[in-house]
Image (cartoon, rainbow, N blue to C red):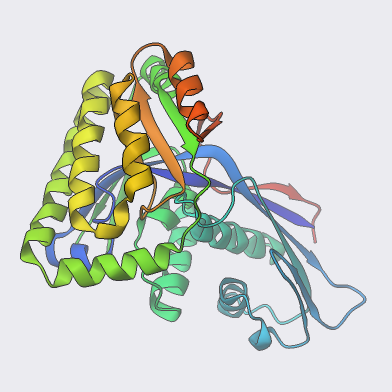
Length: 329
C-alpha cells in the first residue's frame, strides 16, 4: 500500500497570469502558497482480482483502465503505463470546487503514489510537469500552471512563466518570524458556495481574449503580484494586506463571474470591520475567502461567522506532495 499526501494551494498575488491565454502573450508571474489541508491518495495492488477498483465521490469497478470514467485517474494510469489491476482511493480535507486547486492536488498526489507503486522516486518538477501534461495537453482543460506546481513543490513560492510555458519556481525569502506573523494575521473563511472553476475560467478566457482593456488589467494584476512579493520579503505585512485589496479590486474587473452580490456584501463588511485586504481563492464565485486582519482578529472572526461564513484553522505547508506510507508493494 502507498499513501501520498498533497497540500491545497492558496493564490496570493498575480493569479490568472499562469493561464495560457495570458502567458503566451505576456509571460506570467505569480506568488502562491500551500496550506496544511491535504488530499490523500491510497494506491494498492488488487492481488486477487482482475479489475480496477476506484473510490472517490463515486465508486468504479472496471476491467479495462481505458473504461475508467474519472479522467484524471484514467490518464494518470495510462501515462505511467500501469496495466495490472490496482485500487485507488482518495480522501480530502476540503470539498472540491472551493478555489484551492483540488483537482491538481488530486492529480499530483495520484501521480506521486503511482510512481511510488512502481518503485520510482521522481522530482517535484516531474510531478508538476506530468500533471500539467494530463490536464492541459491531453484533457484540454482550461487550467493554468499554478495549481500543479504549488501542489508539487509546497511552501510560499514565486512562479515565473515564459511565453512557451517554461516555469521557474523559487521560494520567497521571508524570515521565519514574518511567516508566523503572516499566519497569525491571515484569516480563512469557507463561504459554503461550490462552483465549477472550468466554467469560470472558460468565460474569463473569452472575455480577456476579446477585450484589450481586460488583457491590460491582467498585466496590472501581474505587477501587483510583484509588489506583493516585495512587501512579503521586506516584512511589510500591512503593505501586503493593502496590495491584496488592490489585487481584489482589479480581479473583479477582469471577469463578471469573479464575484456576486453576496460575496461583495461579505467583502465590504470585512473591510469596514478591520480587514486591510482580502480575496476569493481561485477562479472566484465562491469557495474560500482570505483576509488580512491587523487587529482584533477574534472579534473580526466572530463578526464574520455571525454573517454566515465558517472560520477555518490553518498553517502553511512547506513539504509539497509527499509519500507518507509505503509498505514496499
